[in-house]
Length: 104
Image (cartoon, rainbow, N blue to C red; front, side):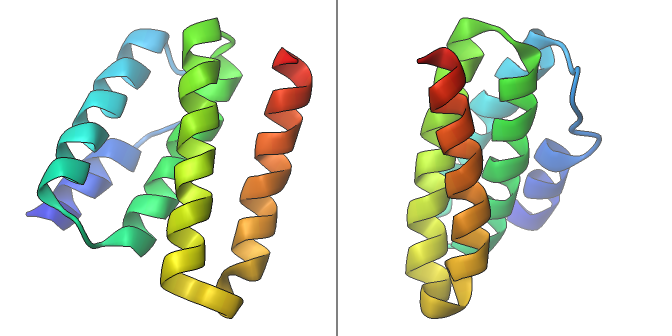
């Protein structure tokens, strides 16, 4: 099911994870996006965690992926949660701003 797949993407997602494992999860998330037009709240959470891991990896390409993940997570949060998502969106935006400052 989609829920199990989302869980498998976010399972054991951590800082310091090798770039190869992150690339596999990015591809799996892309496939899920194509299959699941909805489930935005859960995808946003997974996207945020994956963005953080990509950012921490330090690889320039993965930092670019992290930026895209943060931006899409912001959009999904706004769509799904509206006003209730403001705090979540603020956290995502803060991380995105920090990433953009670092990669400048």
